[in-house]
Image (cartoon, rainbow, N blue to C red; front, top):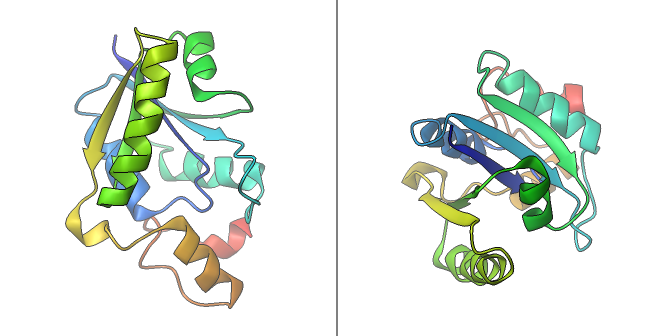
Amino acid sequence: MKRAIFPGSFDPFTIGHESVVLRALELFDEIIIAIGMNSEKKGFLTVENRMKLIEDVFKDKDSVSVKQYNKLTISFCKDEGINFILRGLRTASDFEYERAIAQMNRFMENEIETVFLLTETKHTPVSSGILREILKYNGDVSKFIPKNTDIKKYL
């Protein structure tokens, strides 16, 4: 059984994130969406609300689960017995950043592989950071989050 984690802060979870997970289900039997605590990011939504939002999006997909962790992603993989890290790439700068992390992870744990999926072109401009700014000023983000998600419910 091939299992992967899809780590991130997901603050908030976007249509780009959703697309990566749905496409990756063709490659993996199980995906754990792992909400990590990034010491360099201040949370907008609470971790509990991020988890609930993602669980609601994938409520009909038994092969997708959500967990929180507060350690190195590579350590979380080892603890969960997972050999694949899934990452979505929007831009060339995403690739450079993610490549460096993937290489360091590989140096630390040679048996854990990082798999990159390019986002769909239509999702390239969608980022959690931009959505947080729109939400901060009460803007409408409904086009950029999974369908049937009432973001106000999670604020």
